[in-house]
Length: 326
Ligand SMILES: NC(=O)c1ccc[n+]([C@@H]2O[C@H](COP(=O)([O-])OP(=O)(O)OC[C@H]3O[C@@H](n4cnc5c(N)ncnc54)[C@H](OP(=O)(O)O)[C@@H]3O)[C@@H](O)[C@H]2O)c1
Image (cartoon, rainbow, N blue to C red):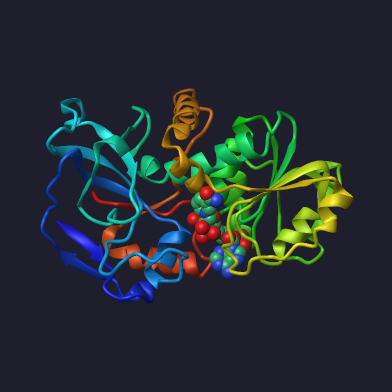
């Protein structure tokens, strides 16, 4: 099989495309023939060796996969053979085949493509966990999504709209704002403009919002928090801008708002069964056509280093997905 290997931490251009032996399933595992692999900002940090957890070298990057089960290890359920599944793994998705615990396989709904499935679990479960469990989003509320044209941001737009919210998408370029609008955002704004908060009222008739969904951090967070209405919720999702903002705590008091951490990964590590209702809701919404996780574009395996570099360079649009068929 072909695979991308990281042999030393560094730039994505150092990654090697190699021919490797197929994996064999161990007890309780299945082998998935990869049809598509989803990438995120965090995968680029794993390759750079700058994420809070370092993957031991060498490793195959890629933590989200969709494909067909082609081999069963001892004790893996026979019913999984030949099934289309999606799964998470800390590493290994940028390979023609991957061995994973059978228990981590989630069936792919019939109307979902492999590309959509490969980019689905992390960004959509994080969005639903963030809005429903952490943010208590109610129908008719107004949500401001930062970094709205990134992988996590686009899923947040889709999920917030499915929950009946009004969505304002903040992004840095016209192309990104157009992509956010095409994903369903009601309004867009350029949050790199220092005066962006003045745009809220003419757009929405209000000067404030009920929720902020923030996967960006840096200087953007405090300005967004200052735009919250009383009772508002600022959902802390990530720090793609690099800097972790230090927010004056009196703002939470004066605005009577909440700052809520959204660590979906930690939530399901504590109890993986907690993810079942999230997935049930999301797959039902796919069947009903209420959300559409189809990525805007997919790339061949050889272009995975370029895709990871674009994530680091703030040039990526939507959820980047690697496809393993032509
Ligand atoms: N909490 C959780 O459970 C959870 C789950 C998944 C991911 N995350 C986190 O969410 C964040 C976003 O992940 P993602 O995969 O959506 O990344 P992404 O596709 O690269 O999107 C991130 C967005 O952040 C904005 N940004 C601002 N400054 C940036 C900079 N210096 N470099 C790169 N991007 C910058 C960009 O939008 P503009 O150009 O429009 O500013 C970009 O579109 C990451 O920090 C990731 O670790 C958290």
